[in-house]
Length: 114
Image (cartoon, rainbow, N blue to C red):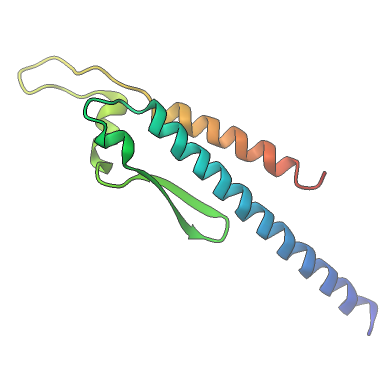
């Protein structure tokens, strides 16, 4: 075999290992984010906070979403105008969980090569 083919094989194997590690990290962070959202979400009846799920979209990409109450998340996060005037109280729970997940993911990605 020539040198170029050997280098291509080594780089392909390394790329595959890195992709697998990134997917594992993304799944772990998504799982931790779901747990955090279940703990920090507003609880009136408890149905909203129990509805958080994670789903794999493609390799290395995971989505955290509210199973039944997706349209309610924005209203709870930012508040909304009431029917007879005034505003409801905002319950910020998504943004802190998102920022925490981004921080965890970037720190763990930096530590792959170590």
